[in-house]
Length: 83
Figure 1 (cartoon, rainbow, N blue to C red):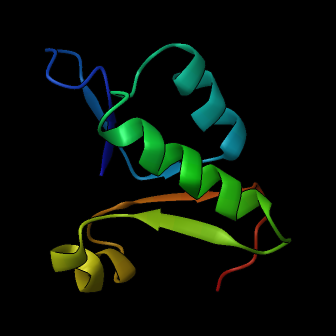
Figure 2 (tube, one colour):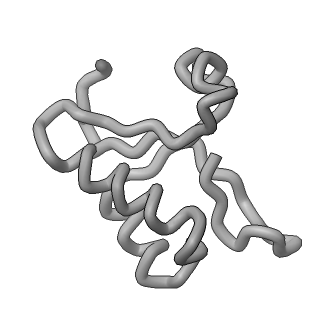
């Protein structure tokens, strides 16, 4: 999953983000440049590249659990169709 305020007492894991929310967190430097930032930027770009697309950020080892909704962070436009 993607987190904001990672490693801090008030850190929070995110299940879902819109591209707009992700950009706000990016502007607030919430994601490490060599770690989560490129993943979030790529997921936003993919989700916005065509209507109905959404992106899932997770590890390969947890992909099955993420597709079942148990972990991971989805980035999708509001009103996006399920894929």
